[in-house]
Length: 291
Image (cartoon, rainbow, N blue to C red; front, side, top):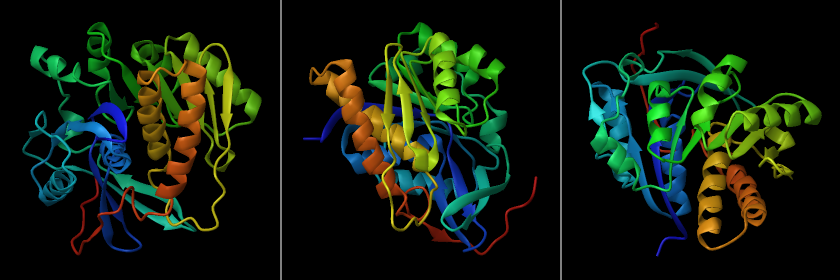
C-alpha cells in the first residue's frame, strides 16, 4: 500500500539540465521533478503528460521516466529538439544560463481533447507551471472540474497572474521580499480565485494563505547544501501530496495544511542533498547548440 493515497499528474515541461561546470546532464523540468518526487514519496499513482523531442536528450528523459515507472501513456514524441537548460553551481546554488525555450514543445501547444480530459479526471490534481506552455488549456481544465496546482515561479507579471490565476486551485510561487510584502502578494493571488496561495523564500521558509489565515513554515537548517536545483519543486510536491492525503483521511483544512507544510520542509531539505533535481545524472561529451 502506498504511503500517500494521492494520484498526481504532471502536465507540461520536461527538460535536461546541463551542468556546464561538471559536464553532467540531469533530467528535470517542473512537472518531471514533481513526478519523480512523488515516486520517491510513494504516492498511489504518478503520471506525466507532455511532448518530447526526437533527439538523444529526449530519449534520456524518457528512459529515466520509464525506469521510475511513471505513467507516460498520454505523452507524444514530436520531430525536433527536446527542451534543455544550461546551468552551473556556485556554493550549491544553481545559476541558470542559456535555454532553448522548451524546444519543439515550446512551439507546439498540447491541445486537450475529451479523452485527455477524461484521463485527467482520474487524478486528485493536475500540476503545471509558467514554463510549461500550457496556458491555453488552463480554462478548459478548470471548466472540466479538474483541480490544478500551478507554479508561477518568481517571474510572473501582475498581468499574467490576473489572466491565469482564476483557473488555478492551488497557486505556488517564489518571492524575494519582506514578510509584509509577501503577505500582500498572497492576498492578491488569493483574490483572483485560488483556494490556497503559497510562496517560498529560500532559507526564509514558506508563507501560505487560505483566505482565512496565514501559515508560516520555517526552512530546515542544513549544514551542507549539495544542490538547490528542485528545492521549490520538491516543497510544492511534498505539500500537495501530503495535503491531499490528509484531507482524504478527514483532517480539517488548517490541520492538513500545517501537517503538509512540516513534511514539505523536511522533504525539500532532503532534495537539497541530491545532485541535479533528483539525481540520475549522465556525463555528456557533446555540445548543445546556442539559440
